[in-house]
Structures are given as C-alpha cells and as structure tokens.
Length: 190
Ligand code: AMP
Image (cartoon, rainbow, N blue to C red; front, side, top):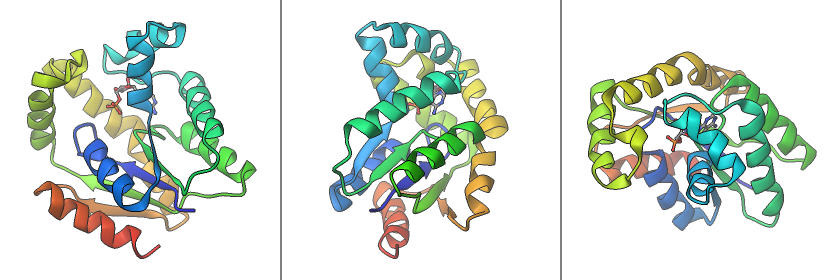
C-alpha cells in the first residue's frame, strides 16, 4: 500500500494535486476539511461543532477530528492506499494516525509538503473564495489566522515525519502540471 500525507499551508494546492494523484494511483482521498464541510452541509451535530472553529480559521479539536478520520479509514479497508489531505495538522493527530495505521500493520509512506509563499497563498485563497462558497476563504483576517495556525501548530508535523526520513519538501509555486510532475517523481519512486 502507498499511504501519503499531502502537506502544506491552506491554499497550497493539496486538494487539486490529491485529485490528480488519485487518478494515477487509485488511492482513497481523505480530506478532513471536505468531511467537515459535508457534515456542516447536512447540519449534523459534528458539523455544528466543527462550524464554530472553521468559521474562525481555528483548528477543530483533535478528539473530534481524529474520531471522524478513524471512521472514514475503518469504513474503507479495501483500498490501494490513502491520501491524507489536511490531516494530520497537529503532532497529536500524527501520533493518532501512526497508532491507527499500526493497528492495520500499515505505515505512512511519505509526507509530501508543498512550499508556497504567503502572498501567493492569500491570492489563491481569495480567488477560490469567489466560487467556493466558503466563508473562511473570503476574509483576510480569517485567512491570516489559518496561516498563523499552520505555522504554529501544523508545521512541526513536517519534522515529526522527518525523524523517520519520510518528509519531502516540494516546490509548490508554478503551474498545476509542473507541480504534479514533481510530486509524481517522488510517489513513483516509493
Ligand atoms: P481545509 O479544507 O483543509 O483548509 O480545512 C478547513 C478547516 O477545517 C480548517 O481551517 C480547520 O478549521 C478545519 N480542519 C480541517 N482539517 C483539520 C484537522 N486535521 N484538524 C483540525 N481542524 C481541521
């Protein structure tokens, strides 16, 4: 199995690239952001809880996020592998993911981190906000908060996997196909 973490700040192109990797490698794409938006759209208790954090650009608590992720993984055991997009976002989530995969005698193959400059991120998210219908894509202060949370809480996850020589930094500036080729070069060598 190939289990990938697609990593990087909000707006770095994780969702776009995950879809292209799914097409090529037939992996299951699990985006915790998409899962939360689905729950919010259906106004479930989980969606209602997540909404209060997402609207502020804050992280949903680990216990809630890990429980939701685990349900999704457990419900899809017969896959060629997983692409985790937007998860793990904290060290505690990374530890929980390790434990979950270990139970299944699996492991993370690579963490691929897309590197994109802050100015470009803000530009991309505001552009996406014109059509995404996401309130967290339309407000500069919320976007800035998401970037700050990424720098403080999420970026240490890169070092966590670097201890096991699994973290790879990928240039995330440029056109979509060029960035995909950079990612694909790493995935095809696993
Ligand atoms: P995303 O679509 O990945 O940008 O996620 C949108 C929002 O959902 C984030 O700003 C967080 O509020 C929440 N979220 C998504 N994934 C996680 C996660 N792994 N841990 C905590 N909150 C998350």
